[in-house]
Image 1 (cartoon, rainbow, N blue to C red):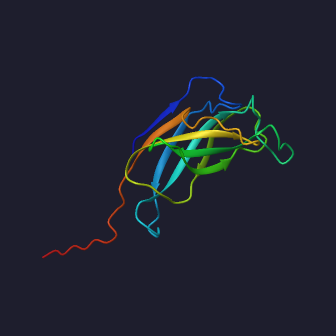
Image 2: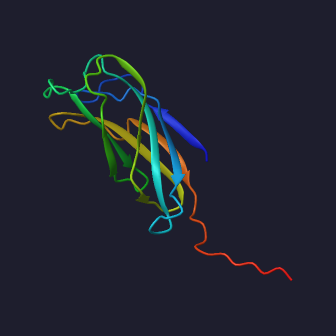
Image 3: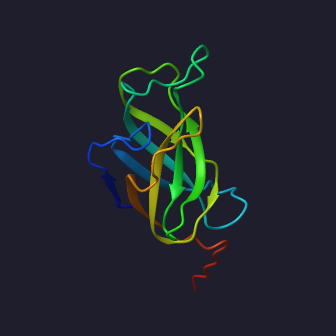
Length: 148
């Protein structure tokens, strides 16, 4: 699978910029998946929490709460899943990772975006930090072969 990563030039978007390298990996669902065409997204990003510190058990306001992952392929952002920022982070953090639950995805090239969301709901643009990945079609449900 080929993954392309794009990141925005350094500028502030709302109160947080996802000044990150964003990579996506699409993993096929396990053999016991419910339906063909379901995949998980494995994401890895870097974020500098210097300006907007991450929330923690004691800091719950004016802090970065979570990252949101969107599918931008249709032109209208579709939120796929969210995952929390590392609690209490106050500087650059590399290799923040998360894996989605099984998601139904059509095969083809998809554009994904990641946002940073503050505790008050303020969110960066899903178009500021993007990556593209190709979703492979599902495998046949059954296969029979006769050798004569």
